[in-house]
Image 1 (cartoon, rainbow, N blue to C red):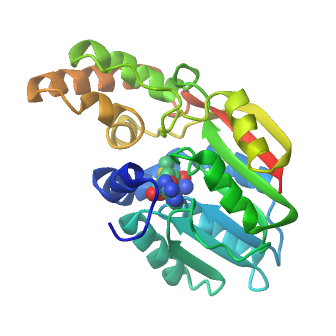
Image 2: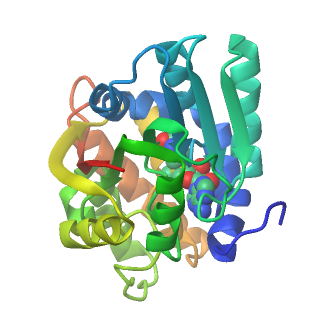
Length: 281
Ligand SMILES: C[S@@+](CC[C@H](N)C(=O)[O-])C[C@H]1O[C@@H](n2cnc3c(N)ncnc32)[C@H](O)[C@@H]1O
């Protein structure tokens, strides 16, 4: 483990296979999330000169967008617990020649944010993995100016996201049954319940909390691109974890067929169900 963390399981997860998959599939993931990015960056509305923190910034897609939006008079801090993902973010920032970005390898729960520094804290799917979310959001708020904006996207329940539901339902009959998941455990659907998100943000000291249910098309492209994403990110890899080679082969065939039938002519017929969350520090 490279950095102190109160979330050892999450840190291990994002520094092992899943982190490396996000690195190898960076271009596919960026493309697949095009509409998610547009919708959430539109809500964040970063302005020239602003200071932005991107929590769980991963391989840097949105850090790059903020670096451009805030310009040389502004600044961006990307924070992430994953060594391979943050290394790629740093590489992309250097390649783009942005001098207004810092990438910090850290757990956002305990990172020493400069007090009252940020005008805006943003995250694309990077805030659902804390063991103690109230502690994490309280720490994050310490780095925000009074009245600063918090804007992030997270997933509503899995059935509300056909992009995940269709492949999971196709694979499930072919693999060993999965034990029921704890809906509150850290993970991609842990912020699915509106009352839970409101409670965490309220306890962490945020106000003007708003959650807007937003369905956003996924840019699945062709079946090859969709399979590249769905077999390496999202909930499918965990479902396939304990399958034999034969079970996995049959599951993948079923997923491929189901996706091919559902993607639509432009590859954008499947959507994800998001919460677009905003609040003030
Ligand atoms: C689903 S990925 C999203 C990555 C990026 N925001 C994107 O949309 O491409 C979740 C990210 O959160 C990061 N993460 C998870 N737990 C974290 C923590 N406690 N502190 C900082 N980053 C964390 C992971 O390493 C990963 O990069």
